[in-house]
Every structure is written in C-alpha cells, then in structure tokens.
Image (tube, rainbow, N blue to C red; front, side):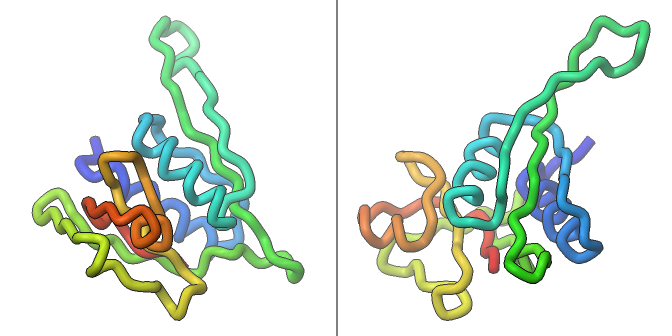
Length: 138
C-alpha cells in the first residue's frame, strides 16, 4: 500500500516519460483525477480516463483505475521532462499567493491544492489564493 498517492502518481508519470511509454495506469482517487485534469489543461497529459476492473476472475470486488496518456511534441517525445515533489506526507508545505513563483521560466508549472481546487501557479497568483504546494512539473 502506498502512503503518498500524489508522489506515486507523479513518479509513475515521470518514469513512463523517461522510458518512452505513452500510457500510465494508477489507482483511482478523486484527488488524483483532479490533478490529472489540471495536467491535461496544462498540456502535459493528452487524455484522462477512468476504468473499472475486477481484481481476480472469481472475485466480485471492482477496482477503479485512472488511465492517463502522456502528451507528445512534434518529434514524438513526451512533453513531460521532470517532476519535483514539494509537500510530502511528513512535511506539508503551504504558501500564500505572493510566495508562488514561475517554474523553469514559465515552461513548467507548480500545482497547488487550494480551497477552490487544484490550481497552477499562474492561476493562484491571478485568483490570489494560497494553499498546499503539491509539486512542480516541467
């Protein structure tokens, strides 16, 4: 069992991008689904879907999964180059909107969990809300 779902999800995305895989499957949660939708808006992910599957053939338990396809550029490489986890389960980091800055000169994004949902660094500065800094992606 994974204690840090967000960290596990972004590392799965990074590992898939580094080895050239386009599709990533992760355990489903509403929090991860909203993060994946925001990454789709930012252009790092092409598609986000949920799918249900049975754990085993004879089992009646249904497991819900998050299926993600990474976005590619013109040369066929994935747009995701790297990620960095900021807030961790052992140390949660919060920031006001004035402390949130651009990532990699504006080519990346910082995702922040706010009271209005998951927002990027630009949206946080525009809406003037702070929250928990989740991770940086570029």
